[in-house]
Amino acid sequence: MPLHTAAELAIDFIDIGQGDAAYIHADGYHTLIDGGTPRYDVADYLRANAVEHIDVLIATHPHADHIGGQIGVLQRKSVGKIWFSGDEHGTQTFEAWLDAALESNASYREPTRGHTKQLGDTTLTVLHPGEQTRGNHLHDRNLVVRIERGPCAAIITGDIETAGEREIIRGGLDLDADLLELGHHGSRTSSSQTWLDAVDPQIVVAQYGDGNRYGHPHTEVVERIQASGAGFLGTGVNGTIQLRCGTDGRWRIKTERSGEVIPGDQQETHDSKATAQDVDCIDLNQASANELERITHIGSERAAQIIEQRPWSQVSDLDSIQGIGPGRLRDIKQQGRACIK
Image (cartoon, rainbow, N blue to C red):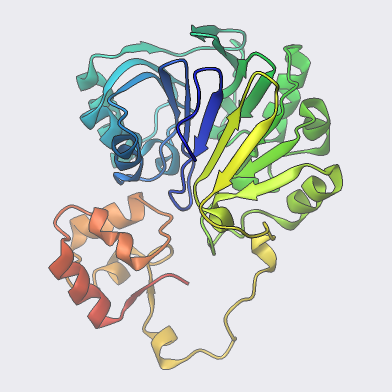
């Protein structure tokens, strides 16, 4: 898609596999919401688009498939402001993200419902959490942000679930949006009919990895979107999705691939009769640390990193683990034990 004009709101949903990464840009300002797993996909995407500075970096919550890729961005780009839910998580990825955030010298804020930031003609408004929001799960205080520029509006939800959706609706802020990113990768935990009715989107996007082990997006969510008549796009089938909205309020769409979003929990599964290869398959997303250490070049430290960076989309992504270069990755593939079920 050609460079957007100064009078357009641009939102790119970057295909990073099973995770979230949304890049918003307009009027020379740049916002990044989440960043996928701990790899450099998003940092590389920004470099390819000549982006050297992020005005607002938003981490919706501290799960690795949302904040992991922001580590590389914080290391490679200058960042003005960081918005974060404030919840801690006892993982290596969170500790690495926190270190990178502190070293970036960016200003830090834990915004709550109603907080706004003006970037040129674009307004960012926090819809969730509220000041009194509590919960036992990291998704409960997940940041949800509405982006508005002229007649164009979008809502980016991270992993918000139905309880959070209800709280947002009760909050009374403007929820109307042309574009909605589905909560929790299109999981049945999110995207209730009440929420969809409140937002009333024309375009819906789900960020998920093709063939992910969670079955995202789930059947009931896909059926609700189809019944609503909204256009439905997904990174798992369409790759990176670029959307542009001008002063006329119309959205232009460009995707890497064409295809229709289908329920992940209805996709064809492997035959129940295990082959010899299946028997010796060590699933990167389910195996224990001891099992992972049966893979060549994987010791206790690398096994812990593999577990920390789950979910994995493909064995080739193991090159994101420190010390696994092209040669060792080739050895791992030749051994044939590492797999994704």
